Amino acid sequence: MASNPPDSAPISTTQDSSSTSQDPPAQITPTHLQTLLRDQLSATHVSITDMSGGCGSAFSAEIVSPQFATCKTSLARHRLVNKALKEELKSIHAWTARLWSVEEWEREREKEGGGG
Image (cartoon, rainbow, N blue to C red; front, side):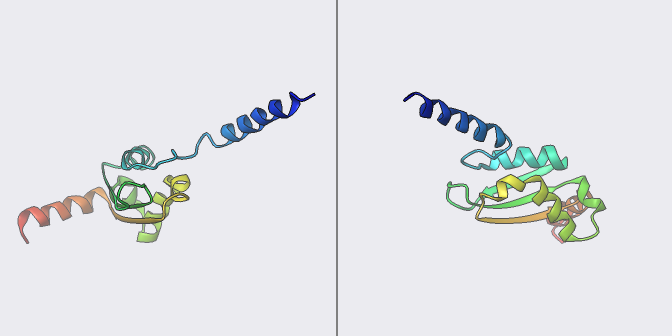
């Protein structure tokens, strides 16, 4: 009879871990975020900077995706990103993102390279 409580504890742990199989890693990394954004938004350029000193709680990002070209507002673009990072954003304290369509990104690069 004493063995019943230990047997029930692993069952509970197993159920918890299977229900959170989509959860982000314990430590969110720029690489993890880049992979998700490239996969889910077909992003052609993703630059993530950990602003938290390595603890994974604050990030800034530059994201270029062809999906942003069809968004009529900046809010719509941010909603796409937030949807792609839904689970990760629950663990991130601060998130700043600059978002461009491919065409906007190319124009921005030309301005910087052309000096004017």
